[in-house]
Image (cartoon, rainbow, N blue to C red; front, side):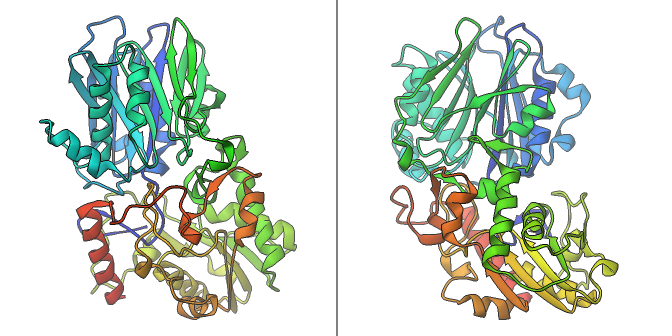
Amino acid sequence: MTTTDSNKAMPFEGLHEECGVFGMYDFDGGDVASSIYYGLFALQHRGQESCGIAVSETSGPKGKVTSYKGMGLVNEVFDGETLEKMRGDIGVGHVRYSTAGESTRENAQPLVLNYVKGTLALAHNGNLINAKELKKDLEYTGAIFQTTIDSEVIAYHIARERLQSKTAEEAVRRACMKLKGAYALVVASPRKLIGARDPFGFKPLCIGKRDNAYILASETCALDTIGAEFVRDVLPGEVVTITPEKGVESDMEMALPKEKEARCIFEYIYFARPDSHIDGVSVYGSRIKAGKFLAMDSPVEADLVTGVPESGNAAALGYSLQSGIPYGTAFVKNGYVGRTFIKPKQSSRESSVRIKLNVLKEAVAGKRVVMIDDSIVRGTTSDRIVRMLREAGATEVHVRISSPPFLWPCYFGTDIPEREQLIAYKRSIEDIRKIIGADSLGYLGMERLDEMVEGLSICRGCFNGKYPMEPPKEDIRGEYFDKEIDMAKKLERNL
């Protein structure tokens, strides 16, 4: 990922996931803020723009929620003193990367709503394709919005439905039935922790337990971080309600037939941490398989297999195991390039890619190298990395990609841009190979995706244009997204 001079994340140099969510309810009354903090820390890879935590005491007054959020990484926004003041046995947390809605503190989550029935604290991962219409309906009945994110539309609809529902969980389900698109929701009402996953299962959500506390989290790695045990995944279309009286209750009224589910394949290829399991499938295992399939389908004679950190590493190991070509580290990654990294001006000789990655010359000099990466979006980063390997002395560079070529945009929370911005659009693999300067180029075959995720139903829309639901007629990713596209075009012209 590259950044602009204004410290903003620049899109399209790599893929980005929208958000990570975490919720916790301690039935014994213990404070949950610090555990939510560590849970968010484990989910930091899902969003580095902003984060927040909201907690309340279930034994206290219904309207009191303590909330804190800000721009930056989890450890930049929160300190021990702040967390110490956040008293409450129920709460939700959020890390954000924006694909719709500007990157500002106002758009940071969780969102906290005070209304006639009490309070709601909501954290959302995903993208709605009908948010514009839903927002317009609310505005015509007097709603005033404080943010530009579709998560606020969800919160308003839950609050509105609560006025006509017997329970908070019924209000969540009724609101969700109006939503079209991708969502994993964690909602804290005054006495309940509620989780919801869209019927297609685009975004992951799981349930954990530690002693007498229950957790909802985007990934299982967050459960491991706080010493909680994995209970199960929230199923696509399921609404779960967690209370001391009844434990975990399930509502499957929104569920679709299994064959219609459409999980985002990039959770397994790129987004999720390799130590997570999603819907019973190991992310690490999926990436190892992808690498093995690449070695079977796109073999080449070489001396070294290496991955572009971090998501390329497991696939590179899989390629090595299958091919017998030694696996090695060719890149040193600067782990301290966070959101405050200021991109060098175009007139400067520093490269943002070189600041993030450097090549170990001793590892690649005089060798034929197979370089594994998770994707090629616009191609500018791949071009630079191939060039860096050659400058370090690699005699050949063979690029293998652990996903099929991108040919279509995504509207469900992944910032894959319009088709004209994609390097694979109207170009052959040979054309792309020449552009990035590789000796050979191979992509993962579409037919391998099912094997990679052990037969789970997945979304392939960004590869074949066949979305699980009718896509919007116009780009719904917002004015901010359009500005970023313009900035990306300017950057490309200056490369």
